Amino acid sequence: MTERNDVIIIGAGHNGLVCAAYLARAGLNVLCLESSSSAGGMSAPRTLGDDYQFPGLAHLSYPVDSAIRRDLKLDKFGYLPGKAIDTIALDAGGNHLTIGANRVSGDGLPESDEAAYAEFRKQYLDFAEALKPLFGNKPPRLKNIPFADKTTLAKIGWNIRMGLGRETMYELLRVAAINIYDVLNETFEDDRLKGAIAADAVMGSAMGPRTPGTVLTWLQRLRGELGGPMSLQSGGRSQLVHALTQSAEDAGATIQLNTHVEKILVDNGKAFAVELSNGEMLKAKIVISNADPRFTFGKLVGAPLLDAMFANRVSQIRGAGVVAKLNLALSGMPEFEGLADTQLANRLLVAPSMKYIEHAFNHSKYGECSEHPVLDIAIPSLHNSSLAPDGHHVMCVNVSFVPYDLEGGWEDEKTTFAYKVISQLGQYSPNLKSLIVDHEFLTPQDVETQFHAVQGHWHHGELSIHQSFMMRPLHGAAQYDTPIDKLFLCGAGCHPGGGLTGLPGRNAAKRVLELGGAK
Image 1 (cartoon, one colour):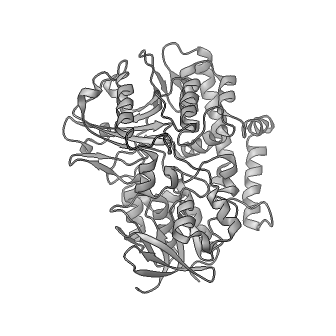
Image 2 (cartoon, one colour):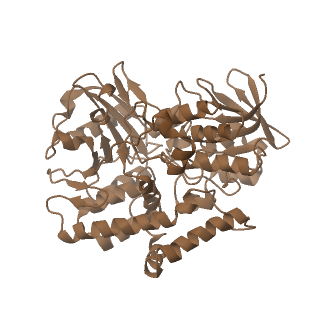
Image 3 (spheres, rainbow, N blue to C red):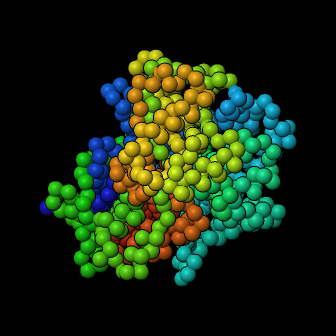
């Protein structure tokens, strides 16, 4: 047993690193334990063979929250947001749409849609801006409200009523809990445009465009754009995880890799140490888990140490993963019909209509893989040539919707389905199959195994209405502290959720310091 630390953080994903850096800068002795051989969690780079590198599960991102960038001096450690990219909605006939931050273009696009798009985007970004105080702070309580939570609620109320104006406020209240399908049908005619927006609204969630609450999930995605445009994760020293690691270590935090935490030790309702897989015990005044809340409470703590009602609520957290990851090592440049090579550096999306997306989602509800899944495609090597040998490339594909529990199991179906996806890609890129050197296909079950994300959910739980804000991840653990004294949460399962924002880590660190730090 080693000397006692002020804080032990379980998991060096980006939220764990943010939390570690903040607490270390506040003067606490912080030890961050990571079970894998590199920091970053799901954002950590992956390799295929000896020559091909991939940027991690999340190949798209927005600039990290500006307060985190400033507070942790990330620019000093080389952080640079990636180059802005557009979304190209692929059409099987080559009639693609290019969707940017403020404009959309493409053959056959109705003029009314082109005009409505900029106004629609502005309105919904204004909605996201109005909710910004909620995202950047711990979720406020609605009972026995402390002063800080009253301040957050007051800021949100002011932003909605005075910032938006009466008519826009009424529109936000009208759409907040409804589905993106109805909203898009009210606004646009073009199926390609509606499909692309709807795909963003449901990406990573077990929801179709008709599912209530998908306007909310789209607003949560738009939150990222408040800090800057979408870009591609392409690896290198300018990327977020590298800068966060350097910032945390510069502040005095220790990041220990290849160290698997087996159990959080609790005595008289208080966390006081962690036990490693080798039997070693490390003591700490505070334990913070960056892991999935279901893994934290169900595996690391264990139901016997939890109140029965709380343990039952943990077991009811909704979050079965529906996204698979296909990584392709290619011997040359793929050719997409109707696109110039320069356009391939953008995000490519196969979601031709809302009906197409809903159909893909319906299959997953019954444990089936759709013959026509939604594909979110990127070629990171066009942004960073060091990811592959000269003349070669790497392609990343997020595949939705893919069930966690596949009827009949994944053992025999995994390779078959991967090749079905490759065949589907071939409808848009005829030379792709001939370029494939190797591939990796990760099902939601693989994500669970490799990243301890229960049921393979990338956000550690659905971002549905009943699991958002002051209800995330569940009642009794929604402000980063938990029913176990000195045990906190800081991962994507916390408010405000997934994505490479770093906000759960920052908010958790602020909560720890608000409650007295390691005293």
